[in-house]
Length: 156
Image: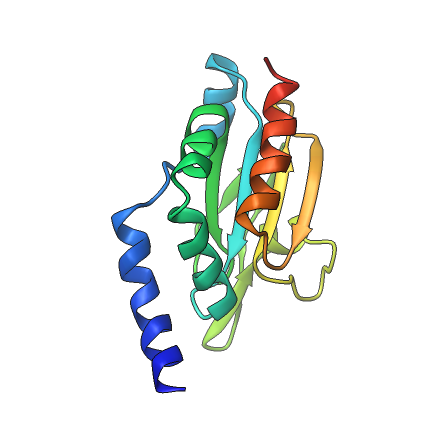
């Protein structure tokens, strides 16, 4: 048990060293005008141990990181700490405080479970922001790579 706790504490350190390039919702519209690409939205929370383990596994896969950086716009979205107003797909989304915590409306809007999203949550959109793939829970690197290659192939 001690080893698991230590591992979970160190995971963010490993991830920081090898982060994928990421963007924001505010810059997405302009980027799509300049160079249309599919979009990956990764919804997570800092407290989610599964999210941390998954992030570590994905970040250590160099081929997957390169595929994501080259052929997709990637947005990592912390559902419970992102507090700024976000405009996405013509709508405004705000942070909903709830005592000492809260959740962003966009996380709820992106999730099929509108009461409480399942983390991690992966939303894959085409360059016109239409849903292409939806995945709740752990997204294994092999399966993600296969799905992203399918989507990238349709844009070449």
